[in-house]
Length: 495
Image (cartoon, rainbow, N blue to C red; front, side):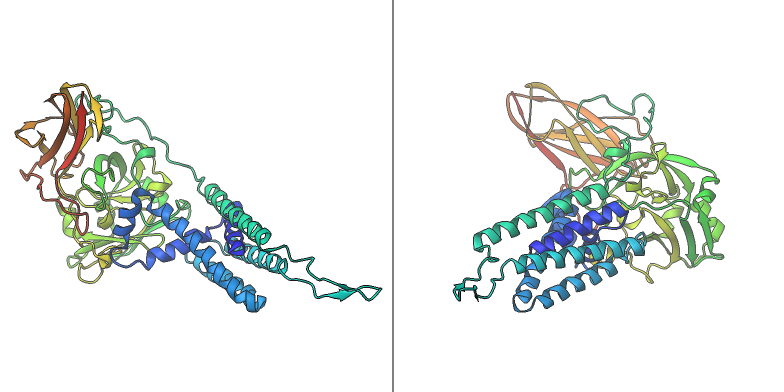
């Protein structure tokens, strides 16, 4: 186990110093690609937004335990243990090469360094347990041969120390590798009067880039080179086209406020945000290729093979303003949010539309292809549901008794929000809230209302009605397969 921990740690350090890919991330990516239906829900339920960190830690622990199994083999024949570490290195190299961004030389250095560290540690530690055979001195006296045997306790302490050292090296390596340029807040976006309530604790109507939620299947933040990046449009089109980053930059740019949401967002969750996205109209690019009439699905494909897919009919209706986005809040699209380009399609959940690091757009039929999440139990068509959330007061917070301001956000992209109401302590009537001026029908709104709260414990619920007149249902459902439903409620104390 100590040898495996050192192998993992050294491999991570070498990867970080050479600009290579992480072995932990490569193994984690394999686990993600092999996940059965429901695995994502379980991980999120257990670890929340720390699910990726949990997978990385679990991968490192699993690798250390595999080292323990190799140690059992090495008790019989150290050569078997050495061969096991060599096999580990070979598998690690192959997994690293599955990532399009992984260089062969860097992958070879990471894998071979891990093997060398593991084999060297196994050789040294196992050798420290060997006792020399008894011998005789010049006078014929028998000399005991235990000088190399350090004893059980000392050995366990030494081995435990190297397990810890290996873990520390892995943490340092992952930290160094994660130091890609982080998203800044973006340019401060001026908004018209009435669109943004100045309430402490209320989510801003335009969420800064650096605090905008991030959901994808990557354990790292890929750094795609815009100079070599290409966007290919193919499939059921009149003519296949390939565009460079410069080509897109030279096309007419449009910008719009769009609220996007993750289908995994629980009622009252924060996997939702609104930003000012800038880029090229998706329909402009599709018109260049000429979409055939029989094409019923648009598939977005990321550089690493991840896919999304949604009906082409959405682009002639609610999603007609879909973008190939190059900018977020008037700043270059951050790497974590899809640089060089991503899809922003108003009105449908991200897992069927918001392809980050996009390199391909394929036109096909709904029957011919299921995108990444569909075989794992998620719905193929996924309009964003009408939802609302309470931000103020905070859950389990304390406020002065009397008139209490309750505020939050509500969203129904492409339909807009027409009404928000709150219910105090389950006693009707519902109280109508004031709405902020919407930035667009695709953007969320803030809401606020003052209610009376005598000293004591209180509960507040919220519900929204969208622009089509449909009100949220009170029936609570989990996110799978097509989004969470139900009223968000919080409890607070007035005193």
